Image (cartoon, rainbow, N blue to C red):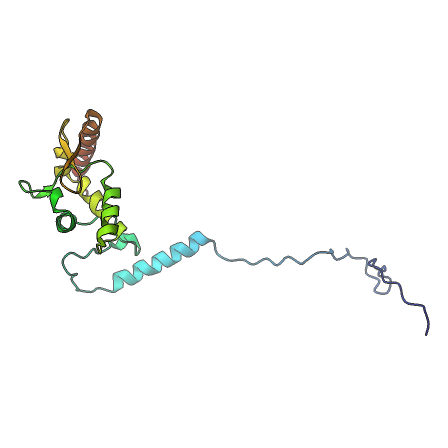
Length: 191
């Protein structure tokens, strides 16, 4: 056996045989450029296709009463508010002490009642999701009737129907501002 072994090296031999004096090949990976449309263009194309399909397909199915139907502009998302009647019906079913018998609406609720309701749902094992409860309270507390109830010194009630606080002057001013915004935004007429 011969002990002569070829020496391995990482150095390249000059290209004498080819006779080309072109630039050497970079010692890295080749970059592959892929051209594809931007994400915003893809989104616009999909949206236009959906709108075109929505305008061509018409159906005369009426939803069952009490169901929430998303508007066409919501792209499959459910709306954040429910009807006032549905919201009051949920409160009347699970917390009847919060319903005012004279006005058939909700009494002023104490600050932080949502966490009390969450706790109550868990302890009583009610079939009511957090999302529905949150939407219910949002709907009720944004109505004109509820905002008009907030006068300085008016009582706030807990889930058990007991007095749990009073409306302060700052809370009253905030409610008046919300009421004013609600009334001025509803006065706008669209063509």
